[in-house]
Length: 265
Image (cartoon, rainbow, N blue to C red):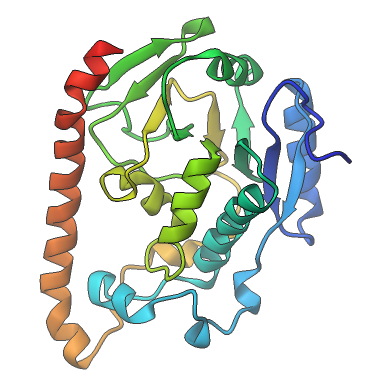
């Protein structure tokens, strides 16, 4: 299969473990219904990694800030996304759509991608995140697309890396930030005040995750039991306070500081 069977659009990479053939079939069918052909990208299986000795993972920092380690599925997920960014840089791919293999699409998903290619609005990372309360605190509309969609900026830092579009500059920047990992990939995406990337969202989202089906990342990531001792246990409350404070201040300062720029757009 050629790198980009959707010749008028960026390549569409779907992260998928080789053993997950049913998910591969589902995604092929779902994308075909909206006129798109995926390029499947082999996922890194975190359950096969020697995580305590993994140079890509900063377990000490993770435990200081969160009181627990990233799970094997989370590490495999972030390394899979990082591998796509490396491919974009190595093969000089200017833009790419990245999907996880448990996503549903609106009928006009392709039209949204087409309209994004035509916009003159500057962007580095466009996230298709629409579950939960992403837009409940409001949003700033920057550009109108067909079928009632718009490119927006939000005052929050939503989670979710199941569907997004990025350019090569974003891939290069994310590669720099993901050499030693301590947060999941979607948290890295959401902290735009740290990445420096022009990170925007589509409202409403034309892609949604399958929240009912089983997750290959694993539900154990939702277990908040603290597993820390010694100096890490003593430092954890202070690190956790700083994380929450920097997150709250960062997203608010970014949203406020972009007001004049957004108004011109």
